[in-house]
Length: 447
Image 1: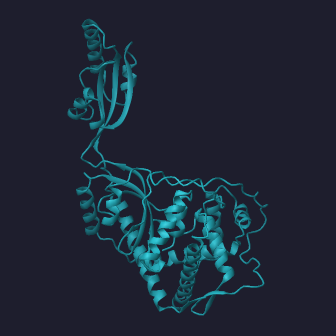
Image 2 (image 1 turned 30 degrees about the vertical axis):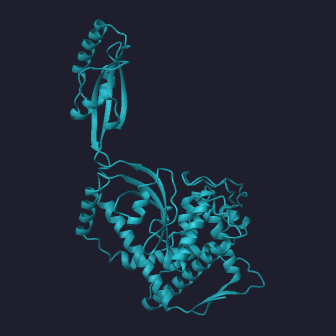
Image 3 (image 1 turned 180 degrees about the horizontal axis):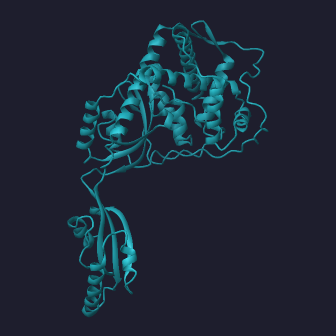
């Protein structure tokens, strides 16, 4: 299901130079925007059309004109941040045409449903204006300024309104018809929780994704070719989130492709194999899977629950490595007294500040395995709330308070999050199948 467009302003994107595959997706360079038009009346939904235009496609006797296609190409390029070349322009034209065909099919189907069931599904002009206001606010603009920025790129407001109308209406229909009937059983949620817990000792990945449906793209070869061009565009500066919103058919498209933290086994095995090789900040090459092609951006990575994270605070007395035994012993006695007065982590700093020559510090959270050898044993053996005996290091004498301890990766197995993710996946799959059925039964002629 195509995501609601979220325009990545500015619309004119200059390539930043092609970074290596190890570099994170670049951000589009700023460009000046026109001043917002004075607030007068709501933008009109019917701008002037050119005097001459020809037929680009016919969908069940409904015409898509060459003007419609040119306008959608402009909108697609502007909102995805891509910089087309002579080689890639045909691919963007095909994607624009596929989007227009899909939206015509969606609106035709929704009109049929409205007539048969006597319900209102298709978004009204007022609802589109509300959506436009939200989009403009995300770009720190008023609706008039937002449309002025579009106009500067040669894009009519009607083109944006038509896309918003189709996407809002289709999402409303899919969620309304299937969302209330779709039941994610507790057995499914528990099975997913059990699998995630079992995988908790494995590395976990924070990822963003673009998924190109091979059926929609015209076959696997076409999907791979399109994904390859998108990877090149992202490396040259197109924002990943904007590309995901315009091109991805995954349920995460509306969120700019952000899939959050995942464990091995949640993605196809081909994706898992690539994730294992990526480093944070890296962008994958196209990854073919059964039904399409993935592009993965690895935002972050962490070790599994086999590691223990510990939160520490300390009270310390500075002592050089050359300190005498008498100096060390005097410091030890003082710290033993401080230790006896420490009641909890919350009041540790205030308690320590009462003793001259002793400083308190918050060491934050770290994996036990990353701690210095002197601190590691105390962090492993002490329970939360306990305070260590004085520990000698090269720079001083310390007592450690364990303020928290948890398995890394724990806490990610959340019931509601799992249910929401499974629901989104099911609705996305239903929408893709619905669209395939509409395409198969439609009469579509391209010129």
